[in-house]
Amino acid sequence: MNPAPLLQVSDLTLAIKSSGREVVKQVGFSVSPGEIVGIVGESGSGKTLAARAVMGFIPPAVARVSGSILFGGEEITTMPAKRLRAIRGAKVGMVFQEPMTSLNPSMTIGRQLEEGLALHRDLDAAGRRALILDMLRRVGLTDPEGALEAFPHQFSGGMRQRIMLASVMLLKPALLLADEPTTALDAVIQRDVMELMVDLTRENGTAVLLISHDLGMVARYCSRIVVMCQGDVVEQGPSEEILARPQHPYTRKLLAAMPLRGPVRAFEAGPTPIVAVRDLVVDYPGRQRFFAKSAPKRALHGISLEVKPGEVVAVVGGSGSGKTTLGQSIAGLVKPSGGEILFQGKPIARSEAAWWDYRLNCQMVFQDPYSSLDPRMTIGDLVSEPLRLVKSLTKAQKAARVAEVLAEVGLGDGFAERYPHELSGGQRQRVAIARAVVRRPSFVIADEPVSALDVTVRAQVLDLFAELQKKHGFSCLFISHDLGVVEQVADRVVVMNEGRIVEQGPRDAIFDAPQHSYTRKLLSAVPGLESTEDGGVRLFWRLGDSGQA
Image 1 (cartoon, helix red, strand yellow):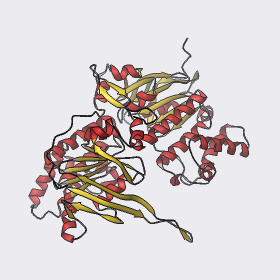
Image 2: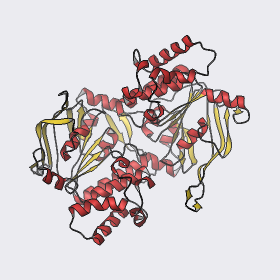
Image 3: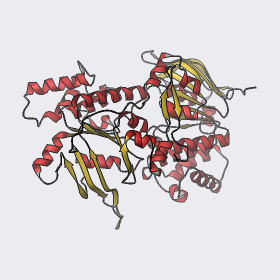
Image 4: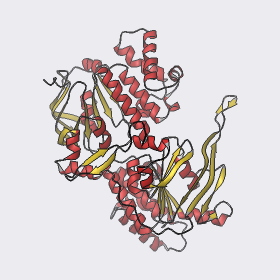
């Protein structure tokens, strides 16, 4: 006999107060004790709002129109505020997408972890400290004592997410709401955080509601999946069934947008690389600390690689591996400490003319377009900016070029007069790509260009990037921690770890027969995908969890 659901959401409808527009429409799902259920959908599908309603965290501009939320048999929607505060944290915990925004930057980690225990547990200071230290060891912090006196900014993204998870699991909640808990993390750290979360919840019999747009991760960890689209639940059922035999067109659309490996791309590469890096070294100076200065940090240890004409070379590795520093060094944004960069066979640092020619032919697409696009400039002005130094084009020709490239990236009439804040994330990334290709450069560096996008928008941007690369023939250095994306776009793969290249080679050789232990570790963290005849996908594991081929 199946146990009664711990959480039962029935006919939940939420609407914008000012307009009455429904953003969550008669949503219903359940979570049983110890069960892990995933909610998937694009940005704006209502999945986060539905989950936050369980905690009573609906934004002031949104109102509940109808529906019921039962937690442990108690109705959340009519619960007195005092009782709701007693449940939050103690019975229902929540892990947010970005821990840096949910951890207080002005408080030490120790004080923040102690807050919940002081509020919900009858323990003295020594008892609270012992529990906190034990939990910090459990989540993988090597110096728990030191962490108590540290601040959030002193930890990496993965460590901050572990600390956030520790703060929630200290109270042993019956239900954990995890809202995109690993979106910004690389593959290995993502797997580590998810495995840690699953282990901690299983020990305590905690139920989990996992909100994500990563279908592969949801399928790996969740027994059931709820698919949401524009506020509606369009499909739900066992994970394997949903992935292998999707029934709703929207579910099939989501699955079709997941990156899949295509055939090896044929292109004619000349004998001279478009860009070559020889023994590149980058050192960051040490930080001044009162009367002493810490030792400098070497970010790149003698990196050498080549990018051939028309080739897409992907650089992969964990956070802190040096891949972004490599891209910024090649783009001229970080000054190397040693080594040289060659453009079409000529060292760029030996003459001003060579450097000028290289900088005009090298463009960059950044990870976050919102921070790289000037909010005071229109889209037309942003895209035309790289043409200011092109003296061979008249003003009318520049305007025509801008209109042409905006049309190429799918931003037609009217977009040139808009500002960045008026566009969606996917549209802003299209603007960033348009700005990079408007000069018709021969080399483009793309630094995590789709990491912040949901699955369908990501697929659209990747298809657009491939079309532009084929049309204009530029070479590309594609930096990413998403191995699924790399498998789709790359001709050749360079694997970095701790500032060194540990392996490089053709895409299929790297993915099918990795030689280095770190490459095997990366690949063991993510599933491979194969299409099924029923319009779905099948997950398979290239390597075991140990990382052995």
